[in-house]
Length: 434
Image (cartoon, rainbow, N blue to C red):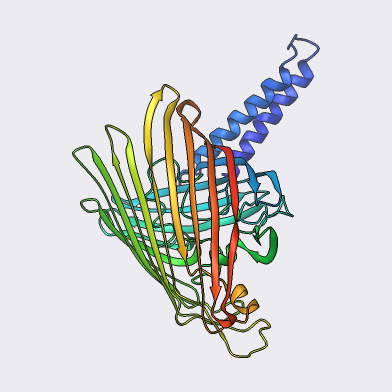
């Protein structure tokens, strides 16, 4: 890489020198600088795609931005944001080399770039971000055997990361899935008055202490992962990571008489005791399925998740009653149905409707603030509609979506109840692959 890069720079320098010394002797026109820049870009592009003589290098990724309009019943506004951590604009460097017939070694470096994270925005912060503008999401090497499977080591998407989400083949996964992304940091209101909590406090994944509503093990970890070869549409994966977690996953994909089916399920165990967690011994099960009738384009996607948090305890924040706070178990499920058809030459159009419910995903913040170390429960719902238009010639998707979020909670101590005002979210955005 270094040798080729230096060669490209030297060639560009010689070309630039030749142009500057002969400018008086020849009429180069007004586009000489543009031609030079184009030539340099061509040289650099060739160098990047080659890698070195043994290991390939490929650059891919996407750029995704959107306009988010929101209305919490008291005020409304519109922000320009990205599409959220793990789904945001990024570039990925990948490559591999053949060790012997049937054996390969390779690497992945996945870098996210985002200035505004919709996970972090709220009524008072339109440019919020949970992570730096540029951050490394994945960085790992792997060794693969066509017959025995693949072993990967580093910061990576582990076996149960996004398991239930990624079976969604409708083309609407990025703008609409079972996570609550836009709105999760928004302050909740009761009868038009802010109550000091956020929507993330009622969509809390105890498994990893994040208010993301679902996919409760959906963040890359430093881990060792194994993926089996695919046999008859079936494959299995397993991984282990730091301090300590482990997970297993199984996947299937096939087609029968014009009906495509994809199913994936995973089980993960988490015992990381970072932050305010005094003890964590949490288990999470998730399953997702996608079915589509190819001739008509009709599709149905569904996902279900369950957290067993009986053994999660947290240090009390300031409850005045002593003791530890217990994290309740929770369930969440999501359905999306619609039509994916190619009505014109631009590309496929996706029309969908969605509905999801999230039970007992109440956070320690709410439990502690309301002195509820005895018992607490909550429920929330989402429903929405949307359209996605693919533009094949530009490897692009455009979307326009609407989502409604509402919820309630109940605290046994003092019989405290609350009904949360609805949050309305409209998104218009686009994603372009490269």
